[in-house]
Image (tube, rainbow, N blue to C red; front, side, top):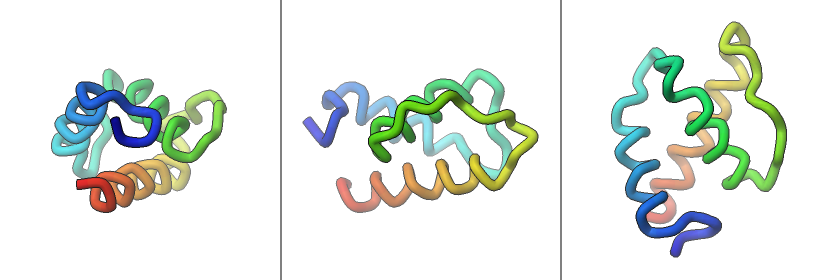
Length: 70
C-alpha cells in the first residue's frame, strides 16, 4: 500500500496518468481529482475544467507522487 492507495488503486492511477497528456478526457476528471485529493490531503470538489491552472497543478502533483513512489 502506497499512502492512501491500495496496490490496485495505485496501479490504476499509474495507468490513468499514462494516458494524460495535454488534454484531460471528461471521464478522467473525477478519478484524477479524487487521486489529487488523496495525495494532497484535501477534500475539495473538482474545479471547472475551464480553469487549467488548477488541473495542471493537480496533474503535476500526481506525476510527482508517482515518480517518488515508483
